[in-house]
Image (cartoon, rainbow, N blue to C red):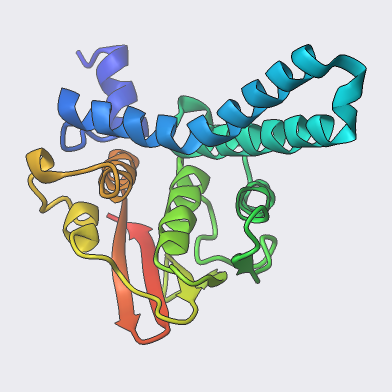
Length: 226
């Protein structure tokens, strides 16, 4: 007789390629690196307020508010991308667009142009779809060192295409091997751990990420069923 846990494994998630302790450490380092700047700025602002009191003026308050917002949106993006809450069926593409906008608005380098209510290639979104979409858009942004625009649209059949378009758009060395899980986990670094981890997560939900196009000024990431 099939146990309840075994049935749950086969209906909700497949067994992905494992993540070693070293990869988990790299992922934690990546998250901490992205959070340390805004959290540190909040701490500095609080210390300044404590020292100066009313004389600190509005600048300290503005610094704290801005930095706290940055920490909050990064945590939200990480929660969707890496956390168990990201597979919640109540999370929809419009939530991903809103979170990604908040994530990228600070430096103003990355914009997005897509309709989260449009057909994105799946008549019925698979479990974990929005989680993997969030990770793919973050990866697309990393392909735009000089900024650009992210577009999301339907591909061929059950396929979502994430376009990263901008000057000098590029897939950095090692990223494709990490995303296809052909890289040796021992050779990963904090820069490569995101494409590796998001592909492991995609695999666990029966999904797959790959580069559909790599050309001057445009990188296209494909999200399909595995």
